[in-house]
Image (cartoon, rainbow, N blue to C red):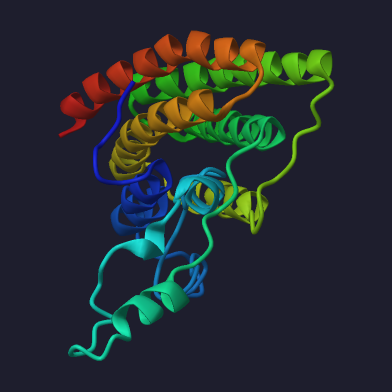
Length: 239
């Protein structure tokens, strides 16, 4: 499993943002603000369903680091300021949350792969897209079958906007012109995406309460690692 010390999975996913990579590589969409998220350009955001969900649900104690905001010169108010400024920790991920997050991740990469399979100009990019479409569809089906067996209804974490992010991702990929820039941007993203998914899987496996759900995530990890290895190999050839 990949894990980068010092940052939560949600924070790292946001740092590596799919939207930033694809928007920088492919340019802004028609109308100039097609990919605006908060301010400026955001393009596709990796969460591809996961960004907001994991950032919201796994970034605990994010506001408790010492930023100096509550420091005053020996007035005794630092502790009070720290207490007042610190947000309540986000609730831990539940099994329904995990099923929802992983389902959306597989849904999005399968759909993105289907686009790359037809829009890619490099044969390896097209073949990789086909594999992503097939493999992530299979992983998604396995998750849905297990959820049904366990009687777990997928539930979005608080403040989740993964459907909006999904719509942005698909819109961006569909509107991007075919060519070498598309191929490179797609593969660069897939490298970043699968690194983030591996980390997300670690977080989800640690948070999962059900043993079968943990086992499903653990069994999926080698497939995700294989995807990452293939994407990195193709990436090296497109430089």
